Length: 311
Image 1 (cartoon, rainbow, N blue to C red):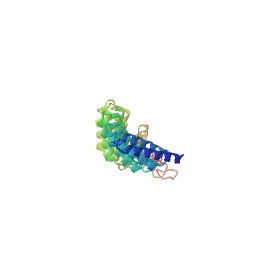
Image 2 (cartoon, rainbow, N blue to C red; image 1 turned 60 degrees about the horizontal axis):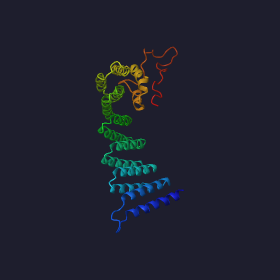
Image 3 (cartoon, one colour; image 1 turned 90 degrees about the vertical axis):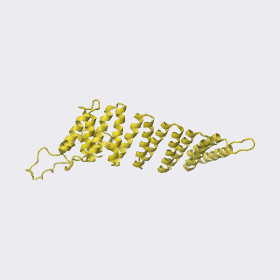
Image 4 (spheres, helix red, strand yellow; image 1 turned 30 degrees about the horizontal axis):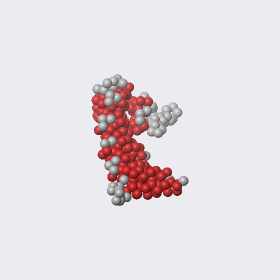
């Protein structure tokens, strides 16, 4: 089967080369037909799992589509060449081809296709290179934003923000979250603005910037429905507990369902939040005497409240 497909591929390449020949009765190469034959050859190589040869055929297809001024089809072929690299686990090369294809989509005047390709590239590279995935998601978001497709843009910005948190690039994450929040405000999705405020507060407190965290909540009072909402009360309680170094209060808020069931990266920030000068565990309501009737040292029964919390 594989050998048959490889033979078919070579037959298509021979036809493509014939299309490119000129003579007395044929003044110009037939780039369109040559591209079509190379596309067929590429599929044959792919089916035979000859991915490197398939990649070369797709690149030839792209070359002749470009000669024919068919940039959209050229970009599609280059993107397919990237997929052949992905099949060989050569992710950096795959991403390079997809990014090149995206530039051609933009040049062709089809930015939506470019943004979707960048999103796909981000998903491909995310398991092995978070930094590159952030870059791709932000580029895709920028393309959608330029086209006034804010719902698509904000979704991609959200992906980038979460990865920035995972990378502990918290300064950049706070900026990205503010941009997300502004977009949600513009499309009047206020409940999502509330969630972004909560995420911002957690990030600022991890940065040790209580003033910035407090400012986020104060600015959110202007959002319709925020004041007095569950999100607002939780953040006010958290900030009060943090400011007063009340570990018990901070623990209760950070382990409430509202925060524990946020996106995983933000939930981890909540569960791992520590009060300045505190040990990270709950305070007991009353200090136990040093050693009880049983002779056990004080705090011996105080289990680690965060045990397993990050999993």
